[in-house]
Image: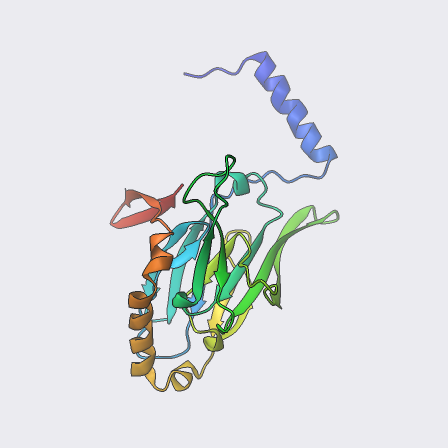
Length: 243
């Protein structure tokens, strides 16, 4: 049995006073965000090739055909977990074979075969959005609300892909917008209502998705599969990506 000492009680008391005085709300650390891709009314969801992020292949946790949603989970690196109230994510939509990588310079300070950055090919079509999480504290209600600022942008002239970019092998013209998001969920990726027409038919859309899975092995090769913790909860099995 653990018994609190007097020192422990006083430490907790002073910590509470400090949080109240500085108007800080204490939250448990966020180790991952849940993301959603919302498709319109179609017969079945297309196969999703690997989503890439910071050297990892992101896990698709669920495909909800009834509501036309694909769910994925993005684990945060330990460095990003330290500051979950000031985070930027980039969402890049392009076909996977359009991405190349550049190795670090081979000098004494660099490790051989270490990737320095990813680059989008010059003529490749794409859309990229920057999403920033905002924590707003209301002194009157003493509550904190979480919102996301979403802005579409353009890559630099070098076409270098920013760090912390989620790379989706989805044709750029399929994407309508990013919307919503909260303390635990990334903004939802909303696919255009006429996506089946843009693809030339729903069967063509599925063919393109399968082709994407087969034609971007280089991107998969440089993004490892994250380790997973599998937990049985009642009749359900939870698959939790870990770092």
